[in-house]
Structure formats: C-alpha cells, structure tokens
Length: 112
Length: 116
Image (cartoon, rainbow over all chains, first blue to last red; front, side):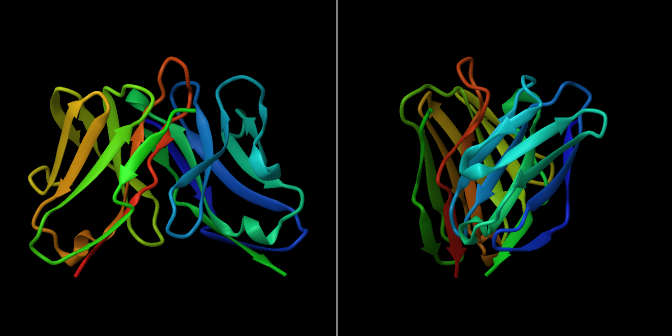
C-alpha cells in the first residue's frame, strides 16, 4: 500500500527565504507523486507532479520538487518565499484506481 | 485540463435534515468519482468511490447509510448527507481520477457543510 508522510505540520519562513517542505513516500510500485496547495476555504490547486519522467519537476509559482528514489523523498522547494505563498500544502501519492492518498499537510507561514 | 464542478460551495443546514452535494464532470465522462472529507486543520481522507451504474465503495469506518452516493450518469455523482449532525460539519471534495489523457486527478471546488 502507498502512503506519504509530511515532516512538520507547520513551517515558518521569512519573506525572501528558502521554502523547504518535506515529503517521504512509501510505495511498492513506481509512484506518481503530487504537491497541492490549499488556501483557506478553497479547493486544491496542483503545484506539480512526478510521473516517472524527469526527477526534478518544476511547477507553478516558482515551486519545484526533486524525486529521490534512494531517499524515498519528494521535497518541495522554492528559492524565495512570497507572502502569497502562505497556505496549506499537501503531498500525495496515487493509489489503486487513481485515488489519492494525502499526507497530513504542512501549513506554511511567511513573515514579512 | 478537465473541469469538475461541485455545488454548492457552501451550505448551512439544521440538524436532522439532509443535504445533497453534486459533482459534475463538465467536459469529459467519468465512470468513477472519489469523495473526500476534510475536517478543519486536517488532511483529506477518502470517504468513498462512486461507480457509474453500480454501488459505491466505502472506506472503512464510513457509514454508507448516512453518506448516500449516487452515480447515475457519466457526468454526475452526488453525495447526500442524511440526518446531518454537527459532527458532519466538514469540507467535502469530489475528484475525478486520471484518465488515458491525463496523469493527474481533477478536483471540484469543495463544499463547506455546516450543520447547526
């Protein structure tokens, strides 16, 4: 069975600082991995996805993630945080039948 | 990308009443839809999988008689919360799975249900 674990339920960075949100996965098959962002009282927006092509994936809003099989990780990064990046971020792995299995979520706060 | 439309976006209902949430695939056909629930400050948990023309599949611990799912057509799946109670207050999101053209799922906008 597939699962993901997000390390850190809350991350706080200063505006302009590096953003690093951690995600580790467990999967018995080559995984499809996703990062989503959720703003308060809104649905999910796909940031980026890994589907077994390039291991470094670039997404929207300057985010990127690197798939590391040896570390079973898929961490999300952004070189310079912006105030508008404050939101909840979810890592997810695709399970059987196409359902998504989500991590616990990481709340990102950005300080001015 | 494909569009999934979910309605209503928010609803307030009284305890004991029923609420129906609709999830429509606007530009594609979906034989399967997933329904997730998200409590405040928590992650999304899969509740059930609706299957067009057959019974839904519920995750362990989800009451199928309370959360009625119907997938009567290839473009519409509905979730009805019956005899709602305050503890059913949550954010409900539907999702169409990837298809042959896409590797990602497509989410509805979500429905904020508040039971008073």
